[in-house]
Length: 159
Length: 148
Figure 1 (cartoon, each protein chain N blue to C red):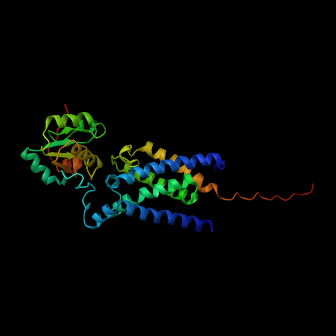
Figure 2: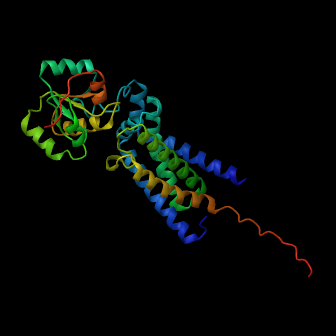
Figure 3: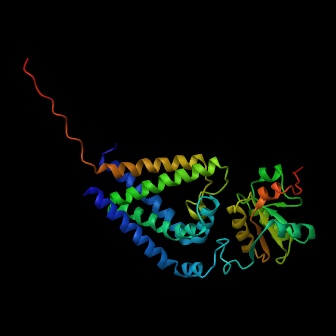
């Protein structure tokens, strides 16, 4: 009897949560079932300047030399090794580096943001912060540092 | 197991308060929460979306239940299951070397590490005490008096 009461209570909370979650985020649920958010959970309506790219696309941009590469990892990880020419904008303390970035480059400057790898949160989170600073051409490299080094591409260590 | 009602009341308010706070922050930005869950690399994409939409409300409702004393044991059960799941998830991220924010408190989240597992373990202890406090006490064992 006590277990039955416990189970009914749990079921009530879960069902109410499904109803509330769907009601409060109905537009997101609708967009998900229409095919959005299938590669990332960055809202393209809120952040139209952010796109996710692969290693091949990063290599093209890297060789072309037009894009500025931004490393979102902690400073110690950046110091140990990073993509050649990458700027360090660590997500754990980004304010100063973000201000430098905004002062140095125009809003239309293409940027490639990466983190450790494996759809890591820090590059997407940093991309949002950069977007909030006015930049509108931000590419997030999903494979990140792990993917870059496993492909044997050039790396650079801080002096 | 703690049975003092005042201590249990404090436990309910602490766990309930943390759950309401954590759930409300996540419910405010479910896509950010979904991105955080994705970083754990433990769930399929569609399930991540469902979790991001529903889980914050499970936390808010169970937290409210604990504080208000409505569906108290069910709320404590959900809190305990979720906290055990969080500990396992953060543990697996630590073992796999995944460097990520825990996603516990939206943008205010700390790193998913051993100290976070410790905090979750303390909350789990409190939730389990609330859950098991309503159990009837074992009847005293009846010893037969024997004549000298």
